[in-house]
Length: 293
Ligand SMILES: Nc1ncnc2c1ncn2[C@@H]1O[C@H](COP(=O)(O)OP(=O)(O)OP(=O)(O)O)[C@@H](O)[C@H]1O
Image (cartoon, rainbow, N blue to C red; front, side, top):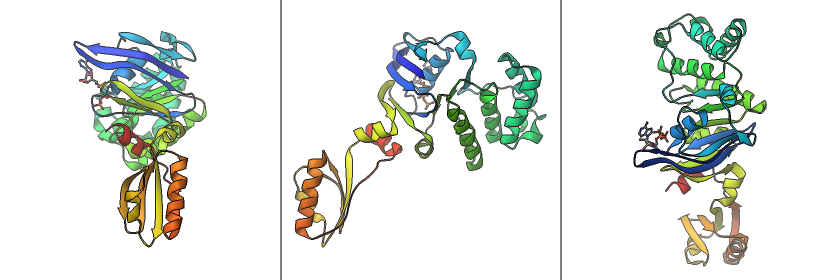
């Protein structure tokens, strides 16, 4: 497990990351979300050691992360960083060798990853001759080349078409299945919903919340859907009920606890027929929107 403990980073007077603590569990995909400028990139740079933290620590399996640990991390930086004018395969082999792979191993792994991204026949092309989306695929291949022990990916899905997103997702799932902790930032909440077991939400440099989907859902407001006849308008007058929406026979309401839910159901049955009364399971993107207001 990777742990970020009380990380803080200032730029001049501005505190970009302020006492942030969260975990990236092994074998789980953790989505890192927050508005522009929330501090995601700065946090990832501190995890990778490319930016010094002014306070706090990064732990791997309970002990401070070392340079050797970080050499085994896979990192896709925001600024990307491959060379536009060099052939793709040469760059990947070079990077693999920097990660202590043999030339042969680096070549076959690079070839395998490029083929996964349908770029096998472009391997001798210069990076700049590829479309932006394909350049992005090569950047991803670069971060996965050395079979990393931890993956830190800054906006890995931006600019990818749906097919590329799917092959990327499949590759990342293969890594989490082997126990690799994966942290990725994204503004694509639908993807975060689809992929994440775990979520970390930052706002203006501070942690808003973090945890597994189930933990975050348990802490989210309890919304229920009620469908009754003849009409649901009466719920507006019920004590302990916050009405989110009422239209004809349908109402969506927020309740504080199970007792209020039982009271509402009893009231509904006394007034007519109850066609549906169910708890609405919030998506992670709804939770994000809820806590980021
Ligand atoms: N090198 C730097 N010098 C000065 N300020 C910086 C530097 N890097 C980041 N910042 C500031 O720190 C804050 C956090 O930036 P950061 O890039 O970490 O946010 P982010 O959540 O990754 O945003 P985005 O989603 O737009 O990529 C911003 O206010 C940014 O302007």
